[in-house]
Length: 386
Image 1 (cartoon, helix red, strand yellow):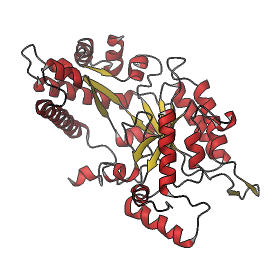
Image 2 (cartoon, one colour; image 1 turned 135 degrees about the vertical axis):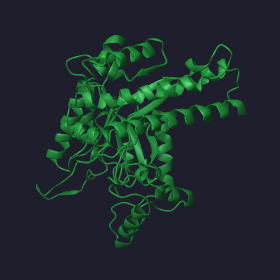
Image 3 (tube, one colour; image 1 turned 90 degrees about the vertical axis):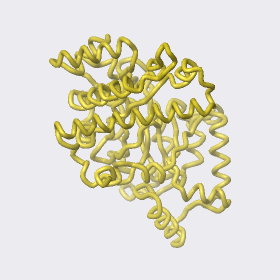
Image 4 (cartoon, one colour; image 1 turned 120 degrees about the vertical axis):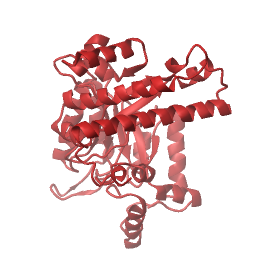
């Protein structure tokens, strides 16, 4: 398998393929599951997760997005989907002169799709993470979707649920005020939200702490929703020049821009940190940096050779070229170094490990930029401004 993966990534570059094979077989790092599943096959879909927002708040938009989710899941991709733009229960529908059924019936359709279209042909179950902002009118029904009790037609237990929380909500929880959108963040969000409050454009008012307790109750019973903080994610993003980021993915390790025209993609690998502890109980930072640079080049190649289940994913991945380098085995490394987990020595080692990975990844990225040019949307990004 590992030789298939290595040759699938590097094709005719035999030296690079052998280098990757040796590092994989010696367990210095591993590529993501879809890369291991699909590299060297007829449809090499090598990326782990895809981030989407709804095409539109309409029947066409909802089912076009559902089709995207099905095609991605079929190709072994996990899904993060932002649904805050979907109108709430009872909202007016101009086209039919009727009222919306809200989020719950729609999400049950997505739930059944996740059950039916598993990842990669029964390799693992379909995985959809649904993100909603707490100002949405259907928020309480959303929090109940995974609960073990209640009406079955009001449940969607095969989905994963997450909240995309603006700072304003946490401020209201702290002071126990009333919380009052999806295209703005930070101060701009607060100004727009508060202007809607002043205009009386509200259909339901609840105390922020009442909603907070409902969130805690759902987490206690079901383990969800995940909690991600919208303003912090946007404030620290290197894609601020593109627009507002609306969601993360199933595992919450990536935060990328997505739109109607683009489906964000994560291209991942994971470093086995315990492998770099020497028999003398020292840490081989030089080897860690070398392997990190190999991973960056591998993931960059994956972006180019990847099979994309939807054109919006290819457009996004080739324009922004995002990669993610994760880790495993940190606690094992502490044990091998004879460091107690909470010791100052473990803390320093932790810092030095991630400084090494970050520096080596940036160095490899700069080398690629000198060879191939910067990625398309580099200009205007925070990193382009230093």
